[in-house]
Image 1 (tube, rainbow, N blue to C red):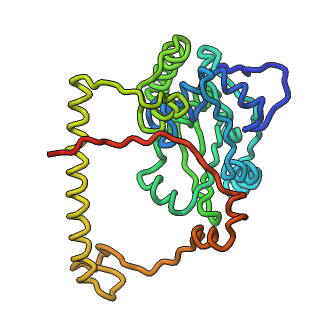
Image 2: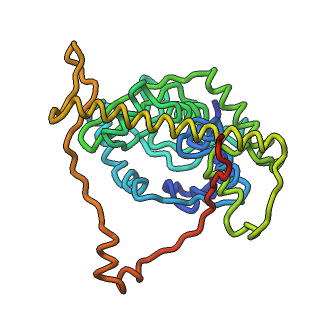
Image 3: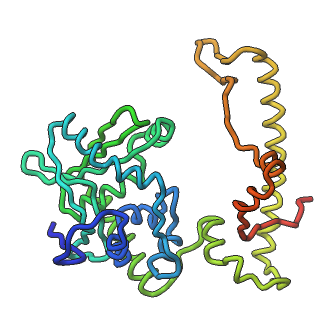
Length: 319
């Protein structure tokens, strides 16, 4: 596949730079593709839509992202050392020639037997790796990589994961044309319908609702009559909350029975010796803000921060 740069005749720029964000604003990147397909656990289609239509800005550069960039050269060097495959940087945000609203910027490119490959690197904790990679590559990484394979015209990708700061895991991803077709359809619908026609995707969670209806827009004391459908939703929501409370009470009761049985033992096992549950000592360090405020009221006030948000409370009770 032929690819082109979204910005011609410019010097390469780093991920996270203002130029990089400017390029991304003109199309949908690999991680955003997973979001608009509903496969990104951290972002929703509505949040991406808000950013692409200029209604919200997402230039967040977290400490984790900065650390990831700082150790990128180290991870790439380790990849070459352990696999024998040399890599090269490709800092520009590229878009597909036939679908200019689909793009991506990769960590590295490589060649194996004359075939172009994409190297994507991730830095995760041991716990995160255990949870998210238990069934293989998570969907959101898989979609992101398939997008890069499509944009860069490559057939193979390597996902190089730095786990817990002490070891690496390598995953190989082959190009999947069926998945790429799904990516094209999702991106085309999102860009040409949602973005170009300014049609918002459905809200997915409370964060979406807070983003669409911010606290500063609230008309204090205003009321809204419920129609039949919304009233039925409130009734069902009240029933669900009551069911949850009943289940939580049952959960606590059963848990206490298990703990009573375990006593001072650390691990509960079945007849085969396999663990059923554990009750282990665990250290936790926390900041005692109340004590600090009591002993250092003036200093506490200097760092006190007040935020405003909208809180949803269901007043209807289930009978």
